[in-house]
Image 1 (tube, rainbow, N blue to C red):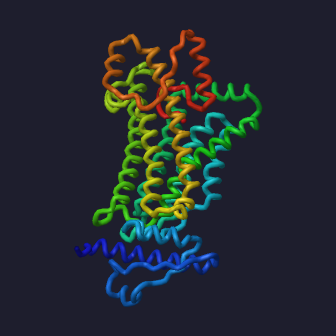
Image 2 (cartoon, helix red, strand yellow; image 1 turned 180 degrees about the vertical axis):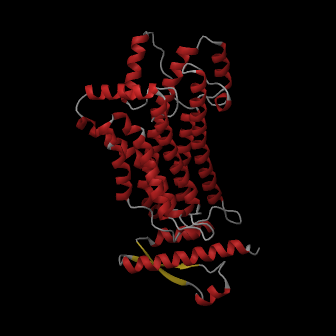
Image 3 (cartoon, rainbow, N blue to C red; image 1 turned 90 degrees about the horizontal axis):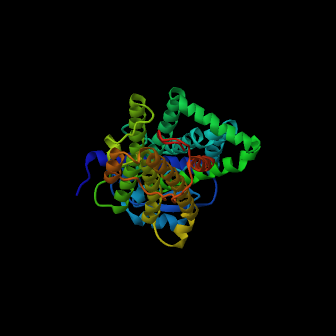
Length: 396
């Protein structure tokens, strides 16, 4: 079946861009190299004349076995085999470490603004390294769709936190209470282990972006024909977007409802009629889909130990990041569930809402016979784990 003219044009432009970029890289990076053969399918007659049978292009820092398996895996993987290099690990480390230094200024900032800034910065570095579309001056690869979701989440989270801190007085007071407790626990330098652990967590959470760019950096968002790996990656990217959008809608609706009806108002309509905690549930869905995308990308690119060992550290980091953030979200959800039960448990509205909505996946808190003072102490312990004591929206 002949390819549409638009698809042919995009493939020709992707080919020439990749060839030019790789030849330029070879000129400046005289390191260990290996040659691969690019298939001629889909090239225009002029291209076939210029590259008679196969064209040898020198690629820096790539393994022969990994490239062969990637080329044989799928049409999308064939295009992605000559993808641009992802951001360096040094750049990613700095992008995650520098924002967390805010934790020395305000303890709570290390898990709020630093969180959003770190993941958004890594996503931006990923997007900047991707080739732009031949139609629009922005990247159009499937890796760009995936990275854009993470970039959107980080920027949206910071804007929401800034709005809440400026316009909702009780959150500014809460931040000061957290800072007072942090000061009582020791000097600012004593926060270093926790600040470093946050930076590591943010780096692990964004590891799938590097995998996606390295394998599918030049694969278009949509392709012709059946290609299950590409479809699975597209589904993972869509769920990443849906999860983060669900969290954004939840934060927006709850903020509006409480601003209009008071802080003690129980929000049960709209998206909350289906999800009791859409901000936490959406974030968990988004980061889980983000991690799944890394595994799908590696599975589609090849098989064998030689191939997997190159990506094993990235996959391990992806799993650690996903498990880490989901554990924090689970603790936050359990804490919020208990507080809502204590405050609204005797009302019929709450009981009806509980029966018709999903609270997400979380570890239920054990029943306790302790009274209000002990409950407040438990909240403080959760705060020390950097889960905010709040019911307004995303707080990590």
